[in-house]
Image 1: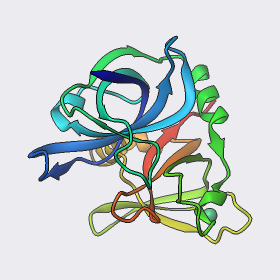
Image 2: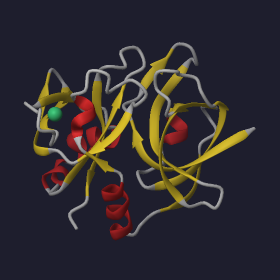
Image 3: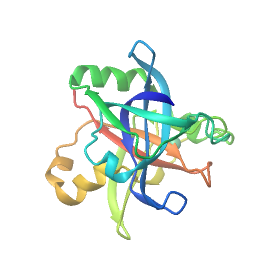
Length: 204
Ligand SMILES: [Zn+2]
C-alpha cells in the first residue's frame, strides 16, 4: 500500500458518507517529500473516518494510506485514502516556521475571478482583506475581499471543523484572532464553487 505524508492543515466539517457507511472528513495539507521535507504541493485527502481524525490537530504531520492517486479528474490535488489509515507522526510547533509556510504558499485571489480558474485547481491560500465572520441559518459564513483587483466581496460558507468548534465552544479564542489567512477549496459535485475550508491566525 502506498502512503502520503502531509502537514495536516484542514479538516472540513464532518459529513456522513453513504458510500463508506461512516462519518467522514475531507482533509487537506501540504505534502512531504521522500526526505520528509514539507513541499509546496497541496493535497486533498478523502475520505478520513471521523473517529480516526478526532485527535489530529492542524499542523500535525500525518501518514495516510492511499488507494487511488487520481480519483477526481477535475480536482487534481485529490487522492483517495483508506478511511481508517490516518496516523499522527509529529507536530510542527514553531510559530515562525508556520508563518513562513503560510507566506510561501500565499496567492492572490485572482483564481476566484477567472472563469476557468477552478479547472485544474481546487485549493488555494489567500490573505483576506476585511474578513467578517457571522452566523446565518446556523452556519458560519464569511464575507471578505480576496485582494484581487476585480474583487467586489465574496460570501463563503466556513467548512473548517476546528474553527466551528471554537466558534461555538470557545468563542474567546476567536475574539483573539488577529491576522487571518484562508485556505479555499472547491467541492466535488460543483467544482466551480469555492468555500472556506480552513482558517489560520498567525499574528507574528
Ligand atoms: Zn475576490
